[in-house]
Structures are given as C-alpha cells and as structure tokens.
Length: 254
Image (cartoon, rainbow, N blue to C red; front, side, top):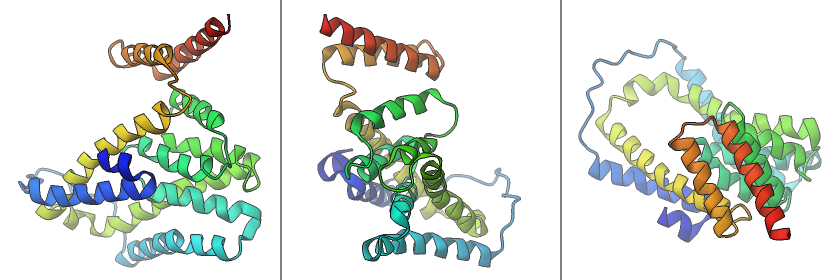
C-alpha cells in the first residue's frame, strides 16, 4: 500500500506485486500439501498455450507503439490499448483495476471524474465482475467511436488479457502449482494485492469527490455497516448511498 501511495499509477502497483513475490519467496517457503487436490481435467496443447502467451505479450507491448506511431482507427486502437493494458496488469480482485482505469480514461480527459464515480457506483449494484465497468467507460469515452461500439471495444479489450493468460498457463499449470517456490511466490503476490486494494479504496474513491467531508464519511460508514454487518445486498446499499447523497446535498443547499 505504501508503494502504491508513494509511486502511484501502474508502476507502483506492478512494483508492489513484484516485491510481494520476492517477500513470498523469502517468508512463505512452507509448501502446501496439494496431494488431495484433483488434477485439472481440461487439457490444452503446449503450442496453443505458447501461442496465447505470445499474443498476450505482442498486444501488451505492440499496441502502445501502434498508437504512438500512427494513431490508427480514429481512436479505436488507442481505446483498445488503454483497456487492454488495464486488464493485463491487474492481479487479484477486480477492484485493483479501478485506479488503472482511472489513469487510462480520467487522467487524459476521456471521461470526467464525476461520470467515472457514478459509473463505479452503478457497477457495484450490478451482478458480475467489476471489469464490466469498462463497457460504461468505453461508451462515454471521447476517444474512439463511443456508444455501443466503444463499449464493445472496451469490454473485449479488458477481458482479452485474462482469457489469453488463462489458456496460456493451462498447459503448464498442474506442474507449476506443485512447485514450492511457485506456491510461495503466489502467496506473497496475493498478500501484496491486499495492499493494492487498500490503496484503491483511498484513491480514487476517498481522494475524489466521493468522500468530501464528515457527512460523506459518515454515509460511507453507514453503508459499510449495512453491507458487512447487516449483509444487505450491494444494490440496495448503493441505493441507500445515492439517497443519502441527495439528502446531504439538499441539506447543504438549504
């Protein structure tokens, strides 16, 4: 969390996770007993996995060059590149993608901060992964075709890295997950993700217009209790937060 706060952006997240891997190799060396776990039944040929990994890397490092050199596709390629990079650099929970998406679409001015936060709130009320938030951002983005076409490009781009990596590692996964050093590395990376998630809660949520003062903080705490302690469904908590925000705005106006 400290690294993400100090460095910010993609670099801080990647460095935090890499150092988490190193810490795991040092501190989490006790191997797990996976003898009782079933072997993955879905088989993928090695050449298919290698091809997917190559495509993943080519898109990750090649798309920025295409955008920088030609700016092809009327902004569509730039839009695909931004969301592909955000999806490729996420490790752990879906909320880790939030600061990455903000850096890709809010920082360059493609989507306004208020619109970003409204969409994030709506995404929290919907079932499914947070990655679907990309469709909303792609539809609103001033770069690219916008609308349904922009949403389609953003959704395909943000999910593509995960599918490529999934197929890319399946051919090697049964051997990899039994290696003690791999288990230790994954434990350290997962621990680092907890810190990245904590940083995402602070920025962009707390540092933006979402929590502007004591009243907004109290409303956030009430929503937290409703969600965690009372186990209310997320969509209902989002509605409570929205109503509370309107009431707070009217109270300050009067």
